[in-house]
Length: 242
Image (cartoon, rainbow, N blue to C red; front, top):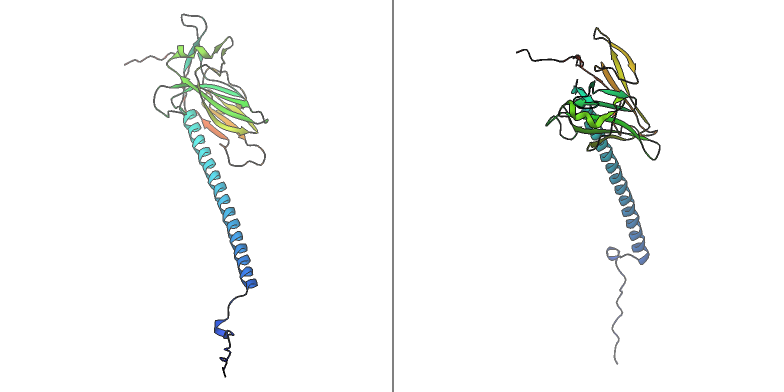
């Protein structure tokens, strides 16, 4: 008589217990949720880093532009230009100013630094389409009084946009911008601030007031005041007595 083999117990011992399908799905779901949270946190950190880097870059540019402004305006030259019919025209001081524009000569260029020829420079406040304003600097070579001809108008040296000028945007978006001029007394002491300047000699100092749009802080040059350490009388003709 044939005997059947005894049945073996195939149940797992406690040390060999596995996972059910539900447990595996739950583990995968938790792992996916943790990974998604880490990715969101990583993305937020990268965006914050990008905004911080952009802000630092804007601050660096603002400081660099402000330093160039100080150097260009600090190197102002007491020069004269010729306006009128030939042969020589009428001698006039090149430095002119209104609250929205300024014309001067300087030995510093925004594009070339202190290298090369002096520049005749115009500062002008222009409007933007969104209601803000921008401050623009235009430069042209200054090779002597006769080079001021493109700037001449019937009222004098008032043309701030000569042909062939090189433009440099100091501040692209401002709520307002104006230029003020400080009068100089005969004793050399500073006087009052004026909104216009049409006197023959240089002012004691100038101030450029730049106000950013609402909610925008630290993304452009701040208000700057530049003293002029030049006391030369522009109307006098100086000769070399050596």
